[in-house]
Length: 495
Ligand code: UDP
Image 1 (cartoon, rainbow, N blue to C red):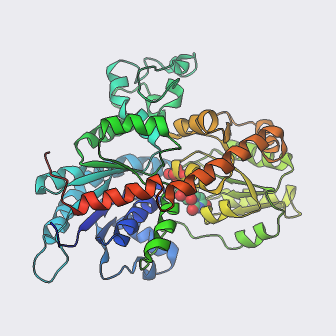
Image 2 (cartoon, rainbow, N blue to C red):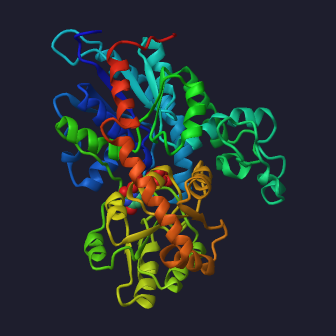
């Protein structure tokens, strides 16, 4: 292996919360001398081109190439219909395995090295839910590393889903178990997760269906990481110390590289690597967010966003709207065109009407999509009402912004527990949204003593995040170790 340039092939799951972390890992490896092939599925590729207004976003470099493979998904990732979106996620996962395996195999076979072409493939880095990539890599004798885009606590909880199923905790015996206190059961045998309750674990256990697609997929794909040569996580050791220690005992080749955007920044400063896009978006950025934020007082704005997948009913949207209105605080709210379930993309007019009628003086700004990391880093932003997706949670940690968590899906409940109980940067908003709760929590976060405490903790974690990513920090060192392990041929398939 020595002397040959290492070549990494990266395969993200097509989804807003998955594509950028994988792109950041790709850029980090590229900066460490790797030749990179980044594989997009067609639907994702199209969405990026559409929102970025042309092919420049996917221009690549001579030694950082994009490949596009068919994904067999009829509905693009930005589908306006929420039921189609849900179907798409489940059908998509099945379709990816059926449709993408052969083209991925071809890409890997075409890059065996030799001649004047790209160097032979050294490793595959795949999103853990695209686990067919592991089968293909194994078949061709190429080392594969799983990249799980969840938090470490989310990953560890999901890693034990199989055991939860085996022990009879999930699926639930009866719908009543959702409300009769059963979810408060403490699980005391997951290492590194003291005091964790069923309700803090993946939402996929909240089913009575023994064949539930999400429960089975999450459990299987997470456990399948056992077969990968290594595991990459977008977190940093100090933030999730006990959990990363427990994962490290199961996965000796664990690389915690988070927060990836901060590591990328520190690494870029150190290596001055040439640049390709750092972010892909499936939606166009709303103009005017920054100008509006510039006009607000420091720390005064509550930023509200529920990520790329969450949908709301019109009633819940109303509760949030009137809660924000009653809080009396300036707010920047992201309402995606496809966010209201059954709304057929009509959410914006009703929200704009609400803003006009209740906050006429410019107290609110509603955007279809924004540059979230920039928004969180803006001095006017003092709090974040979030669904608690991992990227959003980690981005708020990086920005030192405290959160109100409204978890709903997958490991968002676990992230919420850690944000509120372990890191002391958040409070939880109950699942049943009531305007008075929204208003009360926003007021407390933005002006109360409790909010001040959370803000201090958030500022401390921001510093920790920067130290982890800086030269000599844990994530920086882990990147060095990863690049070294991969280029020295240390990983042997089947070992
Ligand atoms: N995001 C963004 N602009 C928005 C809303 C979200 O750039 O207006 C980004 C956000 O910064 C994050 C991602 O979308 O990186 C959402 O990922 P997350 O894991 O938080 O949630 P998901 O969308 O997977 O539920």
